[in-house]
Length: 538
Image (cartoon, rainbow, N blue to C red):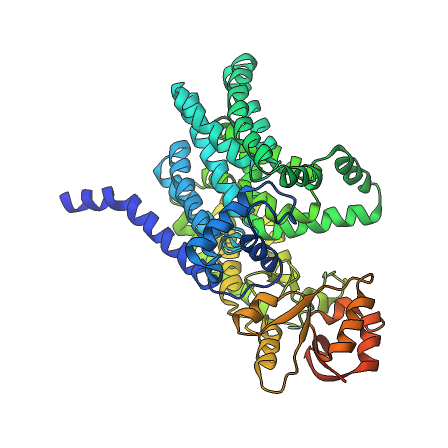
């Protein structure tokens, strides 16, 4: 019996180590992936002097963290910054879940986070909002809960520091404080809630004021571009009355739900329906509802995929609360079956990938065509899915939920299969190895002898070229800048690389210029669609 008791005592630690192993296996391969897309933008922020690069419109914390990461790891390994914050979020999810639900369900919460493709997505993404903000939200919840249970002033001060750091990350931090204030009023009454939240706000304001005084230019830009202006909110609400605005919101919700997955959707609905969950999990439920709804009003809907990740650990805790003891073993067999179905639906059909904003065309072929949830080359920046597999998972989830308690094991198995399948696909592209083929082929072609400098690169990927030892002049298509750029091209000659040919179109001014002044050396196609082109100027 002593040996059995020893194993039981070590059980939670062994469970967390297994969770940690899954976390590392699904994220470590992304750490040395070349910089593409928005990553170029954030690397430039890390390279610029503190407070001078003001392109993203956020307060200064993310820039400082990237700057520190560059000093410690070098710009080649900046992905370690979001990775380490994501690792900290995993640990916080475990201890916060254990505090709210007990040891077993705390491990479930950490496991669900480790398997989530949403978490995998942000763990190596240099738009570090999803990694940093989630950790700070967990910290604020922990210290607020400590004050709520013990009344310690020190806990309230630490909660205020977390709020200050959240505020230095994004102006949307106010939504987090509103949600906590609502929970505090529910638990301790409006008067005590006002005093506590006022104290937390004052600590955060003191930290934010230092930033405003030290970097006034950066601060003014954050206020003007933060997305939370009354004019911006009015414009976004007004857009819902137009077909185009409604499509934008529906498209953004669809992207966010694809990352969220059926299991977290089921967990959130279950938490709201269950009276016991509403009592035990009032804090994470308040935070999820207020924050997710508020983000839709305050920010561009396109940002839902990134910004909703702030409450991902809380969604994992809410979902873990809905999983009963012993259901994991019964769900395992269902998971294997559902994984096989998802693999079959992903393997079947067309493999064409177009790096432009995808739209379902309503055809049978469209259900089996890869769609990038983000619009850049490379699995570390784009989440490629086939609508048939995603629709199967959500429809099956809804159907199983209608059958009641007998279907719980199969429903949980389906949710786990979806998370694991898409996390593996995202990192390893096991069933879709050619998704980043075009980007790799362009880099290989530019590395070959005979390419005439200077190289003008349209689209993203300048840092990937730099890492491969090539210097390029990177540009994005802007009709107003084309005349001066084309004059420079005509004077210097050299090579022009079009990395996103479908987005430009054959009748664009640049394409007409190239047809007249250059020779098409090579085109990179997929299923008849030209994705990239290399032109040599005459």
